[in-house]
Length: 150
Image (spheres, rainbow, N blue to C red):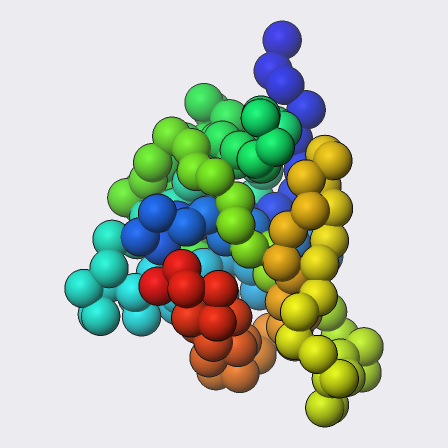
């Protein structure tokens, strides 16, 4: 029996796992591809953990993301279909990126230190606008730099 999964995409940049959540069609995979491209161009290791379905497990106060075996090493690129991608079997999630409608985002937030809880683990959270990769990538890179994760 396969463990329960959530609809999300998980990647690793350096040693930092990033979980990207959002509704279907919000741009999770496109954002993941863009983040991986930026990371690799700056000399960081970067790979997919899972695309579309992610297994999450709380272990010793950390959130571990894994990929269901049936989709390991695969990602769906809009306009190209499913393709093979570089991937790792798991990663410790250190940042959650939530794709939300632009109207749901504060223009000038009082703090950038937002958190969420998944499986009893508190994690930094960055809200990012749906379908706007050119805006989202710099927001997530800034969040990772602020956390001293890249």
